Length: 206
Image (tube, rainbow, N blue to C red; front, top):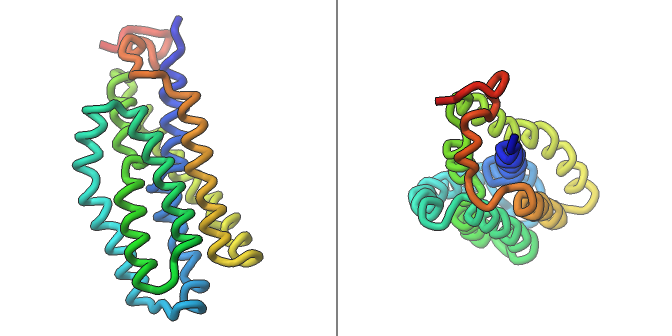
């Protein structure tokens, strides 16, 4: 039996664990102290930054959905991870003011939105039928695992090397995700495997 559905599930878990929903949203607060010390970032400005990220993602997601339909989930997810990685590098290297931080963070959200769940849910939806809900649930565990593991490690990096190095270290996570998913994901959703994927005893999934 073709087990390509396992590659789809594994790629979706890895992608969600290294994408914007896990890597940006759950680590944002770790940089506040360094930014406050260097540029005088206030709580109100940090809150504005979170709002900008949220609005940027909301604006980008419809386009991401269109692009996934047009170019396929594999290409979009890998491109999104690469752009997210580049965005973190820019945050670590080019931020020189609070205003620059707010603008760059918004651009990171816009450019890295394709690394969010949309592409992975498209892949899962096309591959699984009977156990689609379970597959989607397993995919989202990637976000939870990163949210639990990544912040404590990143906090140590920032404490030892500073917030700029923290952003550079953070950039390696989506970059690694892009490399891994490029090898794991099949070229297209494995529609034929929807019959047996996650189905007990390989029974029909119609």
